[in-house]
Length: 216
Image 1 (cartoon, one colour):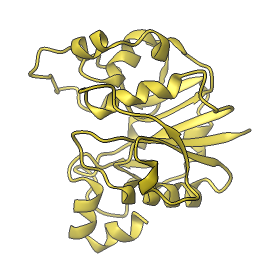
Image 2 (spheres, rainbow, N blue to C red):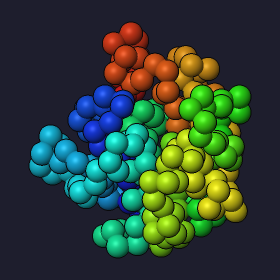
Image 3 (cartoon, rainbow, N blue to C red):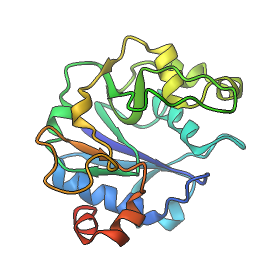
């Protein structure tokens, strides 16, 4: 099976740096030795010259996460099994279980059931798009049918996925604990990916030497 690990790094409201991309690539190389790593970005000049990139940008004035719909563009030079990871994650478990999840399209489940946006947009409480795995070519309408009206109606890309692809499979919630709930090793035995929503990776690395070692 051909595997491509993907991330998205575009200018936006969260000040991610190139370090997030390079460290994610390092973690992926340890966790999944045989794969192609590709970053969709509008800042390829800031990444190492051996980093494979695809030109992408945040759509207009919208939040950067809307760039993730480009992942479903059937015209991208991708093939095989695709694993997408947000930049603010920590890989800690056996990722082959994620890659080989028995579904054509699977995501982390919604992990914030109490969250409701204050700006009037709608949340479709099905998925968390921080971790996604799918076969290339699945659900091209996520890209083809998206427009800025969708972004003004829905909170984020995961809500668009939940609306247009409700039959996608949620992976086990225990695979994706949040850093705020699993503060230090040893991680729960089921954990595969720690979601570092608060604090973000760089802040956590400055606070905890063990985190800096893991995020490398």
